[in-house]
Length: 188
Image (tube, rainbow, N blue to C red; front, side, top):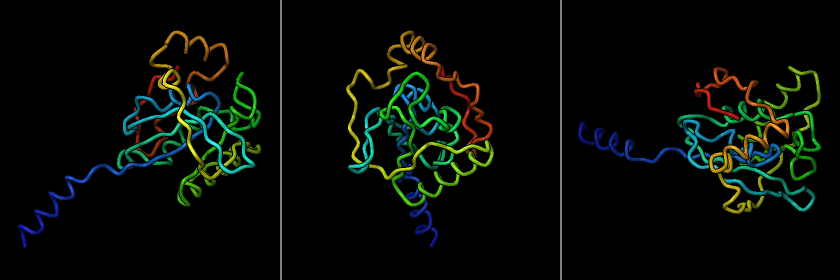
């Protein structure tokens, strides 16, 4: 019995981390990439475009692959809401048009539930209508390599763009509110 239990325990230790995936549109994919980059539990961030269905616009998005044993979808939503203007459906800051409009692309009924609840909570707290759409995930198109990890590859150009465009510098981010207790990341 002991050997069987020990074998099961060793098997559980050898299993890979639970991988989660989430897709966020919040203006420029450069800004969304920088928001999630370098945070514990984030495994890969891919900048690209997504369109779900023939009636929805194509948007700049990031597809975030994360270890859901270290942080949850709710943690990612907390970061997202602190970084976007949830009341502007026409784009984000100086990036205007449907390509830059905010949206949450959900991939499961659980993500749908979390997204709806967090959006409702924000609407109640602010007393305003949240203009971020919740849409089913569609086909993801990867952006060119020059757009991947742009803030890391071109820190001076990115900082100038972000400042000129009016994106917040992270002053609304409060990692202490996150269930997973993520440490603060530098969000320029």
